[in-house]
Image (cartoon, rainbow, N blue to C red; front, side, top):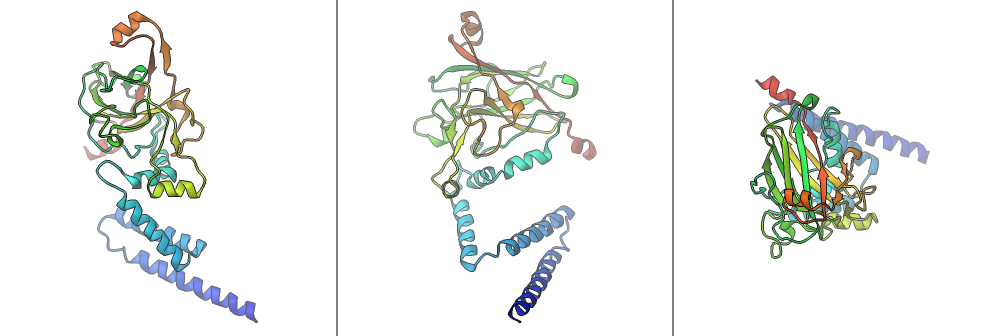
Length: 303
C-alpha cells in the first residue's frame, strides 16, 4: 500500500510539475520577437527538466542563487567572470562549434580578457611595450573562399606576456595596451606584427569560478596562445586563437578551446638577415597563420 501511495504521489507531482512548466512557457507567447519567444520557452523547459532530474533541496537552490550572484559581483571593467564560467563549462566552445563553418578557419572562445580596445598599430609594429621575453614575429594572410585575399581586413590581436599575465591583470607593471594591437591587412590580405612568445597560464582562480575548479579537482591552466579576431565587410567575423605548438596543456585546456588546426609551430629562426628584416634580434621565433573567412549570408539577406 505504501509503495502504491508513493507511486501515486509521484504521478501527481509530475502532473503538477508538467502543468507548471507549460504555464510558464505559455506566459511568453505574447513576446513580439519570435526568436525571443523561442529562447525563453526553451530555457524554461530545459531548466525545469533539470530541476525535476536533480530535485535540489531549498538549501541547494539558495546556494546556486548565491553562487551566480557572486559570479556577477566578481565582474568589473577588466574582468568578466560570467565569460570565465561559460568557458570552464565548455559552453563558450559549444557556441563556437554550433556556429562554425567547415569552409573557414576554426573559431574558438573570446576569453575574459578582451575588455579594452586594442591600440591601432601599423603592419610590422610590435605589440610588446615592455621589451622582455623571447622575440617573436607573427605573419599571416586573411583570405575568403578559394584563397582570395581580403584586403583591408581588420586583425585584432591580444595576448599575455612571457610570464602569463595580461596588461589588465598587472596595471602597475604593464602599460595599457601591452600585448594588444589592431592591424589592417594590406592589399594582399597580409598582416604581420612583432611580439614575444606568450606563456601558458592559469585562468583567475580567486573568484567563484576558481571555487568551482577546486571543488571538482580540475586544473586551471591554458596552453600558450595568441587571440585573434579577423573581420571584413561581407564576411562573418572570426574569433580564434594561435596555440603555441610546444606548449603544455594543449591536451587539457581548462576552457576546452584547442582545435588541431589552430596549433601553430612557433619555429626558432637564427638568421641575422631575417631578424634584421623583421626588426628583431636573432634568434627569434616565427609563426605563420592564415585566416580564411566565410561570407556572411545574413548580410546578403539584409541587403
